[in-house]
Figure (tube, rainbow, N blue to C red):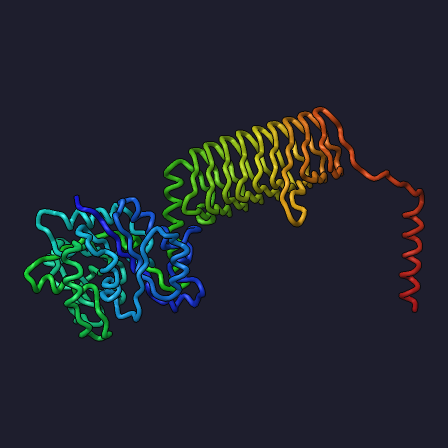
Length: 454
């Protein structure tokens, strides 16, 4: 097999998004749509990747981090003109070229490979076009084949605005994605004209030019989901919903119980083990991994967290990046963790904040406990030993270490280390004034009564 290069078109202005963010950097499942596509491309191990940019090029440069060559299309004169901008970047390349779109993010590697395989089939098509057959053909360009719906050889490519009524009746639509040998691509593009209704240089015209040369081109059909383009906020939301529906179905087929699937939102990299139960209204941000037999209760939000076997969180729990629950640990309602580890069998059941903390196995963190980890300038760590008991409404002011089997009495503000097995109580002396409350209530009632009479 020959080498592969990818040209990704991302020069559009994305005006329908009405955003300061480049269109292809808007996220789906917590990841910019362009990076979804680039991951699929990378699985092919291409020797070259070229991204054609225009407006907001600096944002794409930052997002790609040097992983692809960037070339600019200015002015923007159509898709054919856009692909031509990659010619210098691919000088000397003689392999197969995939032409992709940054706003069509969910083309799987397997589909890209199918296009390349078809390009290298014994009949040697000049161009391979990725096509689909949607329920509503809308204004998509049409691909007219020798045996409509059966054969894969192309007779004609036509844009919707230039198509006749008979051609518009064809349901096979052009996704815009193609595979072409490098030796053919730029020679064909040099002959494309802008003699059409839009006055643009259309990439599909290379198919018609190859046909006029006596060569044939072929199609590879795919699921409409894989080639859905995103041009507006509404389409972004629709694609997010479609992706989530597929991810939920995959989770359940992998052995995860979703109590109310339509209310659970996954990230692109969420990993869940077998016999995990996810209750309603749970949101997974990026970087969550849960082992087997984990229970995630309702209205919890997780990001950058690791949950070992048999752990439980929620309801109404928030796990932020760096949160780690070891086997059998439990986080309850209105507990927040950030860059903290809860040891094996440890519990923080209510109304607690654990930040920059290490909690030993079997420890119990009482309701209302907080680790005071930030002084306004720097972060500090709290270490709580195995089987320690932290009483309710305690403030552990870092840096501080609580020893194994130690007890911190409720309401304590701990600023110094507590030794193993020690009881630490840090409270102001309790002051008692007998009868004071009765006298206060009597005085206030008289004052209120006098006010009403006045």
